[in-house]
Length: 186
Image (cartoon, rainbow, N blue to C red; front, side, top):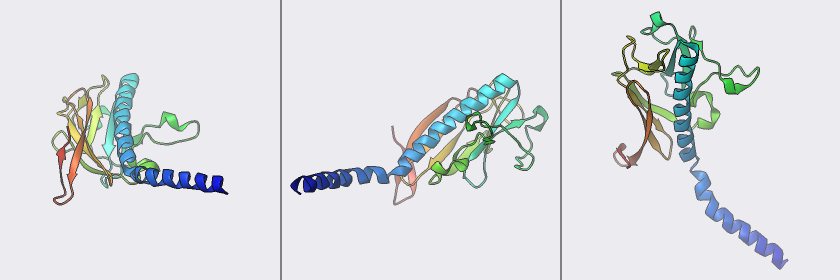
């Protein structure tokens, strides 16, 4: 009986210390979504080079996610239409998976996240890669870069995308609860 009480006490104390870490799930979701975006940028660039076609990461208007689509050279400035878009299949979905190479909105693991801001090339909600893997704007000119802000309950990350090369830099933004504004954390 004494041994049972000792084991139960140890389990209770372990749970007492573990619960605060497990309740911050949004922290892990935000980090995972940032890594997913970086991977999707690399995938879109690589696929554009391998297939010698344009690829675009298109952010959904409701802030729930993004997708990767094929774009014809003469359609660079056309608005995104999910009904006619030619989505790039997710190679990780496996045979018969039919999934899209997509971010936050397509993955239930990121349900607690919101894409708060997207701004590329002066306000566009998309970034396009040419057949050489370079980032270009809607006119086919080198991209000026941009940023994406991912928000979870616990964390905010700004993903800065550099001009032309689309190298992604992740910056954590501290949240001022009273003002609702953020500041960079170095």
